[in-house]
Length: 117
Picture 1 (tube, rainbow, N blue to C red):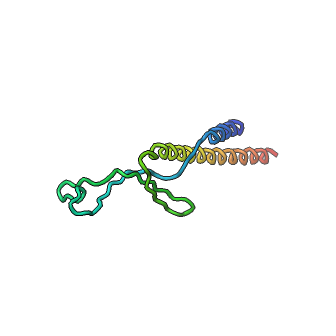
Picture 2: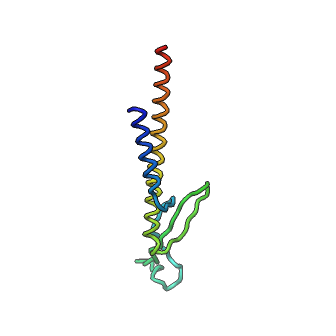
Picture 3: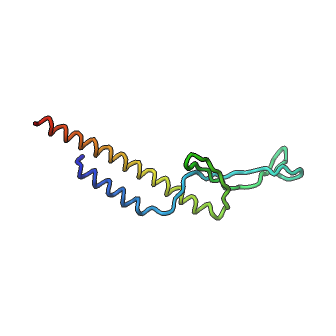
């Protein structure tokens, strides 16, 4: 691959990054819980019917782990933000990969020129 081709790929990645919308890191899961009140269906020893589902968002940022409960009507938009963040990570990883390849290619070309002298 030529430096020009790699530079073109990097420009494409940058354009795609600029189009990304709201994002957030983490994972969204559904949780069920028992209230521990006697007589409640969630405490049935044979067939407990736990309360839920509750959506739980978990993520780490700046070295700190955080967990938050999310209302069901916000689960959809948060899933989109999580998908956008995943795409952001993929694109930035590809950008770094291309930059490394470009840097190595430039070093190889410079070494060849030096060898020709």
